[in-house]
Amino acid sequence: MNFCSHCGSAQLAFKVPEGDNRPRYICSDCGAIHYSNPKIVTGCLPIWEGRVLLAKRAIEPRKGYWNVPSGYMENGETVEQGAAREVREETLARVENLTLHTVFSIPHISQVYIHFLAELASPDFGIGEESLEVRLFTEAETPWKEIAFTSSVFSLKHYFEDRRKGRREVHTGKMEWRS
Amino acid sequence: MNFCSHCGSAQLAFKVPEGDNRPRYICSDCGAIHYSNPKIVTGCLPIWEGRVLLAKRAIEPRKGYWNVPSGYMENGETVEQGAAREVREETLARVENLTLHTVFSIPHISQVYIHFLAELASPDFGIGEESLEVRLFTEAETPWKEIAFTSSVFSLKHYFEDRRKGRREVHTGKMEWRS
Image (cartoon, rainbow over all chains, first blue to last red; front, side, top):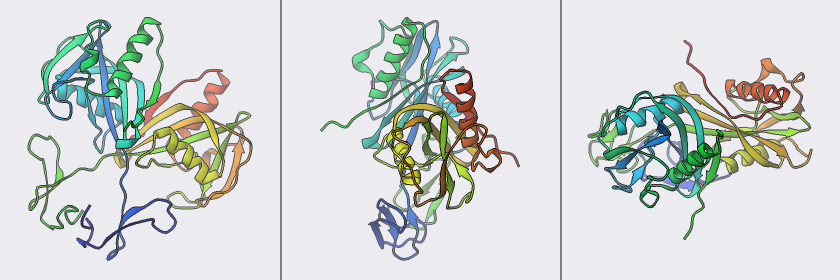
């Protein structure tokens, strides 16, 4: 942030506003306070006969790696609507009966991943614009060393483990920053 | 948004970027795309002997109404850390053993409420800067008509119902906009 998005001034100070307890960008001219908050990445593990539909990423970051169909939640939608939209965009598949599966925080990049388990409405899917390849994986077939993000490994491991144990749980977790 | 926060230009267009599918503010001068995404409100139902600690709001919106201690999640924290921080700020209380309780979307204001159940470390609490009053409520004592937000009613009703039924569940929900 170099300029105030409200008045266009370059006179921005990074300081603690009155009554607040952490620094924000404040415009010295118009007084606007510019907040920045974590983003939600929402997605689904689309299930068909115990297998999970994953998409190989066609875009950076982690291009060429497999991922749980997911992406940034957009304004004006519920978390579930966002999760179903991401599946449709990346795998051309339709999901139903979403149930919350994981909530995973990554504080050093200010992101929260919210993943649902969902049923594929039918085994029809295809390759969305942001994907290179889309396929269903059993636990044994899952390419663990080629999974794009830690949040997806967390969700996949818990899904297969819960399935083996015949239970359904919601799992919360976090990724600590390692230098 | 009136000016580009990157280059200060007033030449902003609200249109769909190439490869995207929804309109964003795009700077016609430097090309910066300005995204806006939903915010997370995180908080706890702090429990002491089956009673829930609520705070009466000292600030708008809904000043004078009772609420689950909660507020905007901040960058650099986990959802759980944010929830515990909000409890501390609003009620001066310390919570532990947080477990996920509700995830509640309000799409027309682009917010997602994430509430945890938490144990009060001790029955010590006080009135934080943004609160007028803080107290523990049983189900019968809960001032249902003076609860600040729908998301809090959702969490409180589910907590007391689960308690009566001797179960622990994670609940997801949404508020539909009514004109």
